[in-house]
Length: 175
Image (tube, rainbow, N blue to C red; front, top):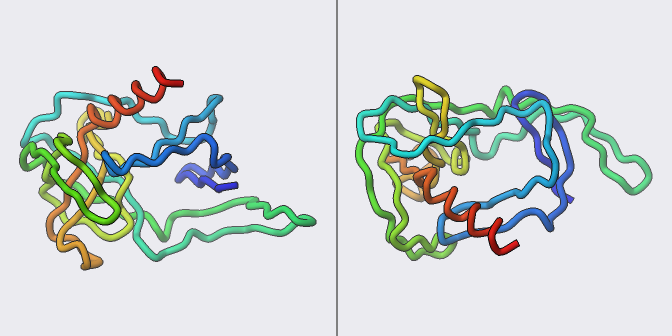
């Protein structure tokens, strides 16, 4: 069992079976079977353009949320959690469109569309949405930063939401 915690206070367990790993787009997709309340759902928006004002929504690496939890018999129960100390959001612009061609140990992206962002990132922000600052719609997903071995990333990159949606449509089509 895996726990998911949202900024709005949602705490829930999810089964590993609904999680799929996709190193070809540096993404993990969770296929929720039912609607979940008390989480923030962003709408996707394609056709992002350089110069667009955006925010990268993320969390600091190596910082755990404050958690109120207990063991009941052999089951671990999280009663509440607070992510406030772990939140790390940045704002800036989409600097330019890029195509990822990376073949590394844990990232294998070939011909994947994305962006270079104008703001610095931090270890732990990967996977967070890149949101249009004007309308709050998701235009991409934070992916990687350089230098790779550094906690603070001087260059930050995101995968376009179109690439993530392509993978979701493919998964839905293939069941």
